[in-house]
Length: 259
Image (cartoon, rainbow, N blue to C red; front, side):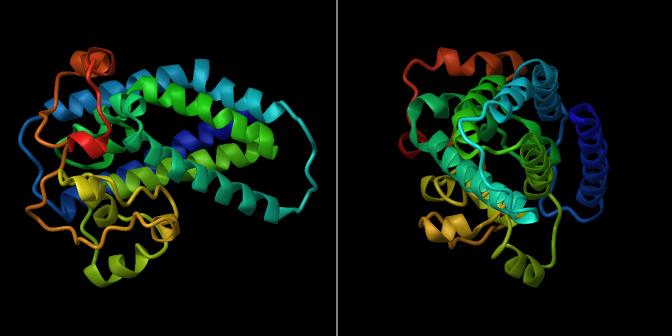
Protein backbone atom coordinates (compact mmCIF):
# COMPACT_ATOMS: atom_id res chain seq x y z
CA UNK A 1 0.00 0.00 0.00
CA UNK A 2 2.78 2.43 0.91
CA UNK A 3 4.64 1.74 -2.34
CA UNK A 4 1.49 2.39 -4.39
CA UNK A 5 0.78 5.63 -2.54
CA UNK A 6 4.35 6.85 -3.00
CA UNK A 7 4.15 6.08 -6.71
CA UNK A 8 0.92 8.06 -6.95
CA UNK A 9 2.54 10.90 -5.00
CA UNK A 10 5.42 11.06 -7.50
CA UNK A 11 3.03 11.09 -10.46
CA UNK A 12 0.82 13.81 -8.96
CA UNK A 13 3.80 15.95 -7.95
CA UNK A 14 5.39 15.59 -11.39
CA UNK A 15 2.18 16.69 -13.10
CA UNK A 16 1.78 19.65 -10.70
CA UNK A 17 5.43 20.63 -11.23
CA UNK A 18 4.92 20.61 -15.00
CA UNK A 19 1.84 22.84 -14.70
CA UNK A 20 3.62 25.35 -12.45
CA UNK A 21 6.81 25.31 -14.53
CA UNK A 22 4.75 26.13 -17.61
CA UNK A 23 3.01 28.92 -15.69
CA UNK A 24 6.37 30.37 -14.69
CA UNK A 25 7.31 30.66 -18.37
CA UNK A 26 3.95 32.00 -19.55
CA UNK A 27 3.22 34.39 -16.68
CA UNK A 28 6.31 34.98 -14.52
CA UNK A 29 6.00 37.14 -11.42
CA UNK A 30 9.66 38.18 -11.58
CA UNK A 31 12.35 38.03 -14.30
CA UNK A 32 14.35 34.81 -14.19
CA UNK A 33 18.07 35.38 -13.56
CA UNK A 34 20.45 34.25 -16.32
CA UNK A 35 22.40 31.02 -16.06
CA UNK A 36 21.56 27.51 -14.96
CA UNK A 37 23.93 27.11 -12.01
CA UNK A 38 21.23 27.55 -9.35
CA UNK A 39 19.04 24.97 -11.08
CA UNK A 40 21.93 22.50 -10.91
CA UNK A 41 22.32 23.18 -7.17
CA UNK A 42 18.62 22.84 -6.47
CA UNK A 43 18.21 19.66 -8.48
CA UNK A 44 21.36 18.21 -6.90
CA UNK A 45 19.95 18.66 -3.39
CA UNK A 46 16.62 17.22 -4.54
CA UNK A 47 18.35 14.13 -5.94
CA UNK A 48 20.20 13.59 -2.64
CA UNK A 49 16.97 13.82 -0.65
CA UNK A 50 15.13 11.59 -3.11
CA UNK A 51 17.77 8.89 -2.72
CA UNK A 52 17.66 9.23 1.07
CA UNK A 53 13.87 9.16 1.32
CA UNK A 54 13.13 5.41 0.85
CA UNK A 55 16.19 4.41 2.85
CA UNK A 56 15.87 6.70 5.87
CA UNK A 57 13.13 9.33 6.04
CA UNK A 58 10.17 7.19 4.95
CA UNK A 59 11.13 4.28 7.27
CA UNK A 60 11.30 6.75 10.18
CA UNK A 61 7.71 7.84 9.55
CA UNK A 62 6.51 4.27 9.01
CA UNK A 63 8.15 3.09 12.24
CA UNK A 64 6.70 5.98 14.24
CA UNK A 65 3.20 5.39 12.86
CA UNK A 66 3.44 1.67 13.69
CA UNK A 67 4.60 2.29 17.27
CA UNK A 68 1.41 2.65 19.32
CA UNK A 69 1.43 3.91 22.89
CA UNK A 70 -2.34 4.02 22.86
CA UNK A 71 -5.24 3.56 20.46
CA UNK A 72 -7.31 6.63 19.82
CA UNK A 73 -11.01 6.46 18.92
CA UNK A 74 -11.90 6.23 15.24
CA UNK A 75 -13.71 9.40 14.13
CA UNK A 76 -13.90 8.45 10.48
CA UNK A 77 -12.99 11.19 8.01
CA UNK A 78 -12.75 13.68 10.88
CA UNK A 79 -9.68 11.81 12.10
CA UNK A 80 -7.84 12.60 8.87
CA UNK A 81 -8.79 16.29 9.06
CA UNK A 82 -7.61 16.51 12.68
CA UNK A 83 -4.35 14.76 11.75
CA UNK A 84 -3.71 17.23 8.94
CA UNK A 85 -4.34 20.19 11.26
CA UNK A 86 -2.04 18.81 13.96
CA UNK A 87 0.72 18.04 11.45
CA UNK A 88 0.39 21.45 9.82
CA UNK A 89 0.62 23.23 13.18
CA UNK A 90 3.70 21.16 14.03
CA UNK A 91 5.25 22.04 10.65
CA UNK A 92 4.65 25.73 11.29
CA UNK A 93 6.31 25.48 14.71
CA UNK A 94 9.20 23.44 13.31
CA UNK A 95 9.75 25.91 10.47
CA UNK A 96 9.83 28.75 12.98
CA UNK A 97 12.29 26.83 15.16
CA UNK A 98 14.56 26.42 12.13
CA UNK A 99 14.86 30.19 12.01
CA UNK A 100 15.22 30.82 15.74
CA UNK A 101 17.55 28.01 16.85
CA UNK A 102 21.15 28.48 15.61
CA UNK A 103 21.86 24.75 15.16
CA UNK A 104 18.78 24.23 13.00
CA UNK A 105 19.44 27.44 11.05
CA UNK A 106 22.81 26.04 9.97
CA UNK A 107 20.91 23.54 7.80
CA UNK A 108 17.83 25.61 6.89
CA UNK A 109 20.05 28.49 5.75
CA UNK A 110 20.97 26.39 2.69
CA UNK A 111 17.36 26.75 1.53
CA UNK A 112 17.42 30.52 2.05
CA UNK A 113 20.69 31.05 0.19
CA UNK A 114 18.75 30.69 -3.06
CA UNK A 115 18.65 34.19 -4.58
CA UNK A 116 15.56 33.48 -6.67
CA UNK A 117 12.41 31.46 -6.12
CA UNK A 118 10.78 29.04 -8.51
CA UNK A 119 9.43 25.49 -8.38
CA UNK A 120 12.94 24.04 -7.96
CA UNK A 121 13.38 26.04 -4.74
CA UNK A 122 10.63 23.90 -3.19
CA UNK A 123 12.93 20.86 -3.15
CA UNK A 124 16.15 22.69 -2.26
CA UNK A 125 16.80 21.49 1.29
CA UNK A 126 19.94 20.18 2.92
CA UNK A 127 19.63 16.40 3.52
CA UNK A 128 20.61 17.03 7.13
CA UNK A 129 17.56 19.26 7.61
CA UNK A 130 15.28 16.63 6.08
CA UNK A 131 16.70 13.92 8.36
CA UNK A 132 16.50 16.04 11.52
CA UNK A 133 12.93 17.02 10.66
CA UNK A 134 11.89 13.38 10.24
CA UNK A 135 13.46 12.46 13.58
CA UNK A 136 11.90 15.44 15.36
CA UNK A 137 8.43 14.65 14.01
CA UNK A 138 8.52 10.99 15.03
CA UNK A 139 7.62 11.59 18.73
CA UNK A 140 4.59 13.67 17.67
CA UNK A 141 3.39 10.83 15.44
CA UNK A 142 3.77 8.34 18.28
CA UNK A 143 2.13 10.53 20.95
CA UNK A 144 -0.87 11.44 18.79
CA UNK A 145 -1.20 7.98 17.21
CA UNK A 146 -1.19 9.37 13.67
CA UNK A 147 -1.60 6.53 11.13
CA UNK A 148 0.63 6.15 8.12
CA UNK A 149 -2.24 7.03 5.75
CA UNK A 150 -2.64 10.49 7.32
CA UNK A 151 1.12 10.97 7.19
CA UNK A 152 1.31 10.09 3.50
CA UNK A 153 -1.61 12.38 2.64
CA UNK A 154 -0.08 15.26 4.59
CA UNK A 155 3.37 14.87 3.06
CA UNK A 156 1.83 14.85 -0.41
CA UNK A 157 -0.12 18.04 0.34
CA UNK A 158 3.02 19.69 1.71
CA UNK A 159 4.98 18.88 -1.45
CA UNK A 160 2.22 20.24 -3.69
CA UNK A 161 1.88 23.35 -1.51
CA UNK A 162 5.65 23.94 -1.46
CA UNK A 163 5.84 23.71 -5.25
CA UNK A 164 3.02 26.24 -5.46
CA UNK A 165 4.17 28.86 -2.97
CA UNK A 166 7.79 28.72 -4.15
CA UNK A 167 6.75 29.06 -7.78
CA UNK A 168 7.35 32.17 -9.86
CA UNK A 169 3.79 32.20 -11.18
CA UNK A 170 2.05 35.57 -11.31
CA UNK A 171 -1.48 35.36 -9.94
CA UNK A 172 -4.16 38.06 -10.20
CA UNK A 173 -3.52 40.39 -7.24
CA UNK A 174 -7.11 40.38 -6.00
CA UNK A 175 -7.34 36.59 -6.19
CA UNK A 176 -4.06 36.06 -4.37
CA UNK A 177 -4.98 38.58 -1.67
CA UNK A 178 -7.99 36.47 -0.78
CA UNK A 179 -6.27 33.11 -1.28
CA UNK A 180 -3.42 33.92 1.12
CA UNK A 181 -5.93 34.39 3.91
CA UNK A 182 -6.27 30.60 3.80
CA UNK A 183 -3.16 29.05 2.26
CA UNK A 184 0.42 30.10 1.55
CA UNK A 185 0.77 31.71 -1.87
CA UNK A 186 3.81 32.71 -3.95
CA UNK A 187 3.70 36.34 -2.79
CA UNK A 188 3.17 35.32 0.84
CA UNK A 189 6.20 33.06 0.76
CA UNK A 190 8.38 35.36 -1.34
CA UNK A 191 8.21 37.87 1.53
CA UNK A 192 9.45 35.11 3.87
CA UNK A 193 12.56 34.85 1.68
CA UNK A 194 13.12 38.62 1.69
CA UNK A 195 16.61 39.57 2.86
CA UNK A 196 15.13 41.94 5.46
CA UNK A 197 15.23 40.32 8.90
CA UNK A 198 11.67 41.19 9.92
CA UNK A 199 10.30 39.52 6.79
CA UNK A 200 12.55 36.46 6.83
CA UNK A 201 11.29 35.82 10.36
CA UNK A 202 7.65 35.91 9.30
CA UNK A 203 5.18 34.06 7.04
CA UNK A 204 6.24 30.61 8.23
CA UNK A 205 3.05 28.90 7.00
CA UNK A 206 3.42 25.82 4.85
CA UNK A 207 -0.24 24.99 4.26
CA UNK A 208 -2.61 27.12 6.36
CA UNK A 209 -1.73 30.78 6.91
CA UNK A 210 -3.95 31.02 9.98
CA UNK A 211 -0.95 30.03 12.11
CA UNK A 212 0.90 33.19 11.07
CA UNK A 213 -2.04 35.31 12.21
CA UNK A 214 -2.62 33.40 15.43
CA UNK A 215 1.04 33.44 16.50
CA UNK A 216 1.92 36.93 15.32
CA UNK A 217 4.24 36.05 12.43
CA UNK A 218 2.14 37.52 9.62
CA UNK A 219 4.05 40.11 7.57
CA UNK A 220 1.99 42.99 6.28
CA UNK A 221 4.68 43.94 3.78
CA UNK A 222 3.53 43.32 0.20
CA UNK A 223 5.75 41.62 -2.32
CA UNK A 224 7.36 44.08 -4.71
CA UNK A 225 9.30 43.43 -7.94
CA UNK A 226 12.46 44.92 -6.42
CA UNK A 227 12.29 42.90 -3.19
CA UNK A 228 15.62 41.00 -2.95
CA UNK A 229 15.63 37.53 -1.46
CA UNK A 230 18.29 35.35 0.14
CA UNK A 231 20.07 34.91 3.48
CA UNK A 232 21.04 38.53 4.00
CA UNK A 233 23.92 39.56 1.78
CA UNK A 234 25.40 36.05 1.67
CA UNK A 235 25.89 34.74 -1.89
CA UNK A 236 24.74 31.34 -3.03
CA UNK A 237 27.40 28.64 -3.26
CA UNK A 238 28.31 25.60 -5.39
CA UNK A 239 26.59 22.32 -4.57
CA UNK A 240 29.46 20.74 -2.63
CA UNK A 241 29.91 23.89 -0.56
CA UNK A 242 26.20 23.89 0.23
CA UNK A 243 26.48 20.29 1.41
CA UNK A 244 29.34 21.20 3.74
CA UNK A 245 27.99 24.59 4.83
CA UNK A 246 26.23 23.52 8.08
CA UNK A 247 29.40 21.84 9.30
CA UNK A 248 31.82 24.61 8.28
CA UNK A 249 29.87 27.51 9.78
CA UNK A 250 31.30 27.26 13.27
CA UNK A 251 29.84 30.62 14.25
CA UNK A 252 26.31 29.86 13.10
CA UNK A 253 23.67 32.25 14.36
CA UNK A 254 19.92 32.30 14.08
CA UNK A 255 18.16 34.08 11.25
CA UNK A 256 17.24 36.76 13.77
CA UNK A 257 20.93 37.56 14.21
CA UNK A 258 22.36 37.27 10.72
CA UNK A 259 19.66 38.41 8.34
